[in-house]
Image 1 (spheres, rainbow, N blue to C red):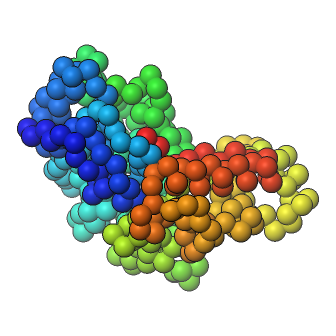
Image 2: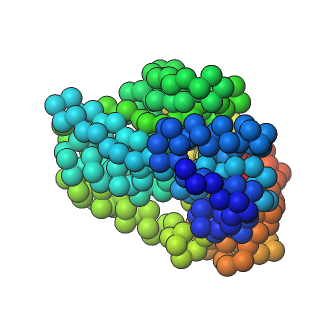
Length: 333
């Protein structure tokens, strides 16, 4: 295991923010992960676990050890349509691998950036599908006890862009592998409006659905290799049906969709921001994408602090106008 000192994190976050870590290590095995944690403990410094850094905003230098989860490996059980994937595997590559092996369910989640280990933390979702529907169990390392544990899906407390792994009392649990239960039968989910429209109401093959999802995502989200970003910065807020009716009095064309909870609806955060004219606006060195109001970008030399302050201005504006508090989807450090 190699531990580097005073390392730039610019290549380790999709925003391309310039920040340094006091120490950086890549864990390619559980043993290396344990060794890295022991090193941090001996130095009495904090630890930050990173996948591909696609959902993180560094607002300052990190004073501790950044550990990149680099454990890889995919195990396919065709007979039972089961998959075990190591935490460091690229998520999109996993989706492609499963689809090419006729194990279905993840096609709507194509092209979501990041690693497989980060996916359950956020309970990633897109185009009518959430990862929670396919998680069977999760392997974790408890950094307090040093023990390996298996957490059943029912105990992961999955919710919209949330899970038990984001809670303070579970911060010691590091995901090392994810077990998925997929299907050998093809039943496309085209319930999401934009996806169904793009498919013109047809019943697509797995490849057609996968390709369509990728095409839609590429049309809306800038490539982080070209323009620094972390995808959607805010979650779509959930409001009561009563609150929605109040808003509709002032905004008759307000958009809403089912929240999965009786008496509540979700509102597209992008719609709220569009009403306030946030597309294309700047603050200091940071900006909002001209294509999508939910995407904050680094046009070139943005600082993490400027991106953070821009996000704060946007959320304050929405709160003042609509009485709705936007919550960041991105992890802010």
